[in-house]
Image (tube, rainbow, N blue to C red):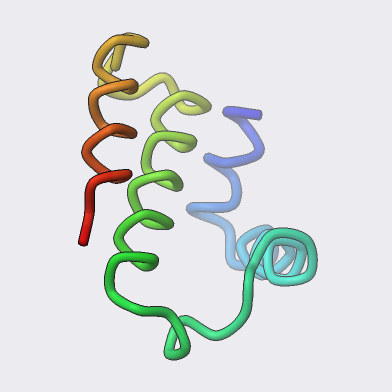
Length: 75
């Protein structure tokens, strides 16, 4: 997965393929339709996912739980 993500970040062809796949399979509609808390949650979740898959930051499970709990308390 790490190699695929890295390729998608630097190669326009792979980036376009990734964006199309993501839009068709994961994306939940237009960003313009999301409230700010939903957008924050999506961006943080994406960041955690990328960090795990690219081996960035070394965030342990306890820290991830704290992040999720903080997100659950957004008003």
